[in-house]
Amino acid sequence: MTDPNNNTYEDTYYILPRYIRKLPNITLAYLDVYETIFQFWNKNKNCFLGEESLCERTGYQRAIIYRALTFFEEHNELKRIKKNGKRYL
Image (cartoon, rainbow, N blue to C red; front, top):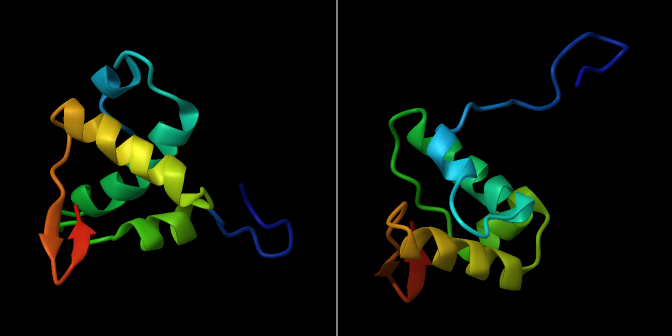
């Protein structure tokens, strides 16, 4: 999407691994969460976003974020660690 006033991109799009879309029972919300996390992986960085930060970046409620993280953890796509009482990816 571009801004018609200055022709700059407002969103960035990332190409996700094809097999992710084929995971059983995946939803568009889960893909949005994965894409947000993947932005960090794609730049060779560890992702230390907490659930609250993911809520802010995706616009989803915490329950959806939690279900998405659990879904990807069950499919061995990510691992959450607990640091200072908060969970990180």
